[in-house]
Structure formats: C-alpha cells, structure tokens
Amino acid sequence: MKKLVSLACVALMLFSLAAAGGCGKAEDVIKLGWMGSLTGDQAAYGTCESQTLKLLVDEKNAAGGILGKQIQLICYDTKGDAQEAINVAKRLCAQDKVCAIIGPNASGQCIAIQSVLDEYHISDMSTVATNEKVTVQDGVLKEYNFRVCFLDPEQGRIAGSFVYDYLKYTKAAILYDVNDDYGQGLKDNFIKVFEAKGGTIVAEEGYNGGDTDFTSQLTKIKEANPEIIFTPIFYQDFINIHKQARTLGIEVPMLGGDGCASEVLFDAADAVDGSYVINHVSLTDPAGEDFRAKYAGKYNGAKMELNGYMAYDAFLIWCAAVEHAGSDDAEAIAKAYTEVEVEGMTGKIKISPENHNPVGKSGCVERIDGVNKTYIFETKIPTE
Image (cartoon, rainbow, N blue to C red):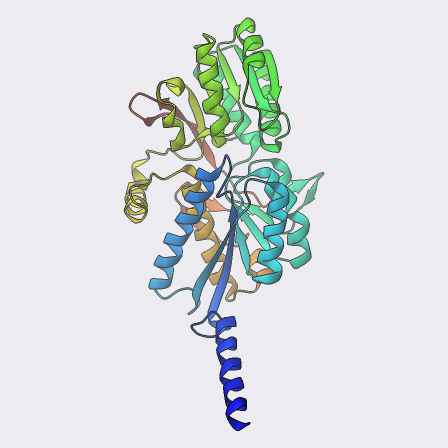
C-alpha cells in the first residue's frame, strides 16, 4: 500500500510540473498570445507575423526575458474567419490565461473579438487592422482594443492624394469585396478624398468574398475608361483580378491598400507590373535590412512581409508596457499601453488614450516591379 501511495504522489508531482509548463513554475513565465491567419487567403501575413514574434521572443528570452521571467508565446490560427477568431480569443483568455494578445491582422476579426476582451479584461494589440471600428465605434472607446497601424480614413487620404495629386489622374474606378469591413471603410474614405479634390469615380463594382470570376465587373470598368482602378482588397484577389483584367485588355494600373502588399504578388510577375500598393513602411527600406536578413536566415531565406514589421512594433510596445507596469497583470498592461513610447520599425509608436490609435503615423506608396520581383519606393505621404 505504501508503494502505491508513493507512486501516486510521484504521478501527482509529475502532473503538476507538466501543468506548469514542464520547466519551472507557471509564475516564472509570462504568457503572450498571438492570433492570426495561418491558413486561407491571408496565410502569408499570419505566417510572417507569428514567425517574427517567435524570433523576437527567442531573442528576448536569451537575453534574460522580461521582469526576470521567460516569455511563453502561444499562437493560434484564426483561418481568416471572424467566428474562429472569437473561438481563439476565448481559448487564449480562458484556458491559456495570457496577459495580452497581439493580432489578429484583419479588421473583421478584431471587431469580432471585442466582447471576449471585455469579458476577460485582456488587451489586444492589433497589427494591421485599419477599420475605424476596431478601437472606437459609435463614439465609444473600446477599452481593450489597441493598434500600431494607421486607420482607413488616413489610408483613404493617402490613396486619394496619391491618385489625384501625385499621379494627376482624375478618373478612377473601384473594385472591392462588399462583405469586408476593411474594403468598405477604405473605399468610402478614398471616394470622400478623391471627389473632394475634384476627381470622378467612373465605376464602382463589388463582389462577394470567395468569388473567383471578376469578368462582369471588369467588363463594366473597362467600358467606363478609368485611368486607374482602386482595389481595397487582399493580395490573392489582387493577383486574380490583375490576371483577368490583362486578359480583357485592361492595362491601366491598380492601386491596392496595405492588404495587397505582399511578396506573394510576385508569383503573378508581369500581371501586377506597374501597379501600386499603399504601405505602412517601405518593404525595401534600408533601415530594416538587418532584421530582414536575420529573418531570412532564421526561416530558410523567407522574405519579410509587411506584417512582420507591424508584429515587431507590436511586440516592442508590449514589452515596454509590461516593464512600465512592472508586472504581467492584464489590466496594468492595458493601462500602460497609452503611457509608453517606442521607436519601432515603422517609426515612433505612441498610443493615444483618447482612441487607442498610434499618433502621427505616415504612410508610403510603392510601385510593383513585377519583372524584377521587387517594390520600388514611390513617395511618402502624411496621413494628416
């Protein structure tokens, strides 16, 4: 009987160690959650975000961690779906008991998880969710939602100013996903700015996410004879629309939002050549060369996506908030987000307490060189 009791005690001790992570007590670890699209049309973005964070966490832990503790990064795939984002947020908050979340990389998913964040009082620092409703809706501040990116109104100003003032075009067409919060917000803001400057929207066509045939919409756009097509969509649709447009004889350039800026575009080579994307930072900025090289070395030559830069900045401000709070208390971290400032890959990051958005960020536009498979910096445009 004594032998059985001893074995039971050993088993209980082993179970307790496993529950604590297998190496040290649970309180010796700070849990940080990440959520984003590892599968689906936005997988390139999510993969780069999660890989960037893993690299940064490994470096931070090797240097001693934060507040004397090691960081445990817990990552989940949202599959690019709002409902799955809710499920993942609940798991991170209720089961994993993270102190904060970084991601997801899309507005619709960020908007969807708000009730979960409110329930558990855990903050989310979004990387590239630009819709206004992510942090403020109907004039009400969302207490636990924050972001490191500029917003759709700012991106709309960049797009409208670039087309009218920089390219000197006065006729634009629009093609967008009618069911996407990101696309809807960016479209509306582009129209507002472009028309106020004197431009004319000669065609406005929509499609449903998941559609693969854009012939009808592109035919109508061709008949309207625009000088440029504004496409506030994501990179996979951007590629497919280009291919079909060129087949129909449409040779005018397209302008995509930040959801189009991806190395995946170069799989389409000539089809996307000469078009433009709005970005938070130039993907060829010399200032990011060292980290791009480090990332490529870690991940078998992989190229850095925009989301890697944004995840980098989100991690920096999370670290600063934890250190400022002096603990991994979720409420204290949320409060500290508006009290710290960091110099990130995309510039200075200071979160406003009024709207939980970064203050004074600028954007840029890059031209796609499909032949040489690279981006060419076109111009930097202030968001205000």
